[in-house]
Length: 313
Ligand SMILES: [Zn+2]
Image 1 (cartoon, helix red, strand yellow):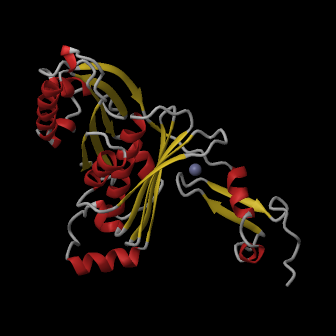
Image 2: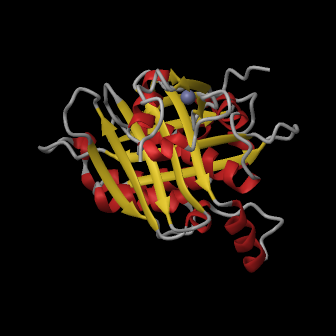
C-alpha cells in the first residue's frame, strides 16, 4: 500500500531563518531500488542508507543537473553509489565481493547482525558531486571514510570540508514483511551565516543557545516516531521544534528512476577492447548487457556495435 507520508522531503526553517533543515523519509523508493538486485541483507542496508543520505544532501543544494553520492573503499563492499536528479528521481547500486563479505563476517563474528556501512566499505572516500550536465566542470567535495557510521562521516564532511555547523541523523529499519526492504529517515539542520548588523533577531548569543537546543531536540528523535506512518513529516517536525519558531517551507517527492538507455550502454561497450568484447558474445552472436541500477537488459548485435565480422589477431 502506498504510504503518502514517505518518499518525500520537507524543507523547514527554525528561529526566523537562522537554521535551515530538511527531513526525508523513504519507503517505496527503497523497495524499488532493492527489488532490482538480490543483495545480501548487509549490502541492502548500506544501499538504503546511502540512498537516504543522497536524498538528504541533494535536497540541501540548488542544481539543475544531477547529484551523485559515491563511497569507494577497500572493504568487501567496494562501491556504493546513489544519484538524484533535479526532479527527484533516485537510483542506487553497490559492488561487492560475496566471499570477502562472508569471510569478514566470520572474522568479526557478526553473522547475525547488520553491520554499519563504514565496516563494510573499509578505508576509502566519500564523494559528493553536482554535475549540471551542461558541459561545465562538476563540483566535487570529498571526505575520508573514518567514522563509526555513515552519519558521522557525513557530519564530518559538512563541518570540516564545507565549514557549516550541522546536525545530521539517519535512521534505517528493515520492513516487517518479507520483501527484504527498508524504511529510512534522515534529518539535517544547518546554521545559516549570521546576517550583518545589530539585528536583535540575530543576536549571536541567543542563536548559539537556540542552536544547542535544536541539537538536543534532534537527538531526542526516536525510530518509533520517524517510522510511525500515521504521522506526517509536519507533525513530527512540529513535535520536535514547536518552541523554535518552526516554518515549513516546501515539500518535494522522490521516486525511483533510472536514466539508462541502449545508446549509453552501447557507448560503454564500445569503449571496451574489441578482444574483450569478443568473449562476451553468446551463441546467438549477441552481447547481453544489464543495467547495474535497474536490471534492464539490452541486447546488442555485432552490427550495432559496428564490430568487424571476426576479430583479427
Ligand atoms: Zn537502468
